[in-house]
Length: 397
Image 1 (tube, rainbow, N blue to C red):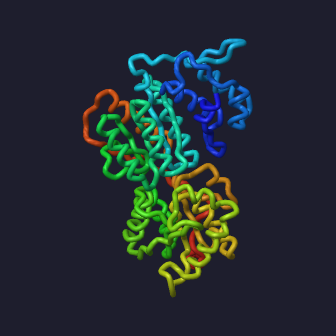
Image 2 (image 1 turned 180 degrees about the vertical axis):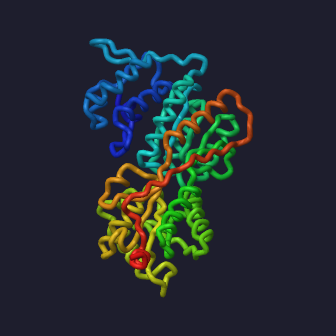
Image 3 (image 1 turned 30 degrees about the horizontal axis):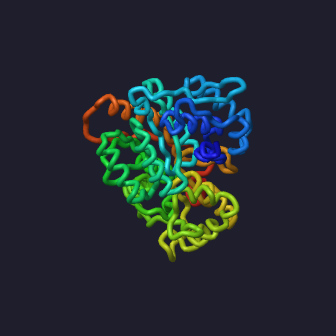
């Protein structure tokens, strides 16, 4: 039984509830036939103790699995798998795989995808990876499990193994829909938010307020498609207004030569001082590293970095938005509840999940067509972190 327990892993810090994670993993183990017909599965107590969760959480997950007809509980004997593979039923499984996202946008996309795909008769199984090597391992496992299709939010820097495995998906004609960013060299459909347009709207909002010294702030991540698109939107809006687009300010990681995407989420707490020091140095140097006055507005590549930047600015004596306006991107839950509610761009996560699912369903039903891309519109959310620069306000008085 210990071997079965070791196959289950929950993320206690995830936005996805623990009972939903457990239900998903049990279903995956059964539908893939790693837990076979007639086998006894771990008890509520064993699952509760091994996973450090309540028996109520376990019970909810088991009840959902039982309703789906995958297990049967017999008083005095235990709980047994009653699922049988019929005509490669595992091929009715769609895998939603996240290699990087750690906020509620991912959860909302998943919920939307589950609604669409289940209504079309597909089982939806989800997972996320701990690192790039884990991503390759899970993708290979899914290939071995004979999944019907894959929705993939890939790691920022896929390994050679990951690319090789995705090419095997392509060879076997298992459809893939990429979310947020494509993987170079893999022919597949792709769905994203309008990163360019959203960033353009943010910068135009700042320009309309009267800002002329506007810089972009981003983690030191090279060649990540949504980051590139957001910076391209910044440059286009600045240049269309006849102003100078400064080189981006890049925040360096505490212990690596470049950021991993998930690093930024761990810097909101105790390590934020490491970012504060870098923001202080960048502000003192000015937009073009020497001689120029500090910026009056900072365009952050996402909300987490914007929240860190606001905290850093306040620690070194700048008031937001009186001295410096700050904007983010994503509109995560905390963006409107921090001390200075954040002006940002909202992604339509529900629409992303719906469009990606429908693309995948069309492929599964035999649609022969070239790889398609879909860009979902974003919406500007103006809050208290932006205002006219002091000079403009004084001139208007």
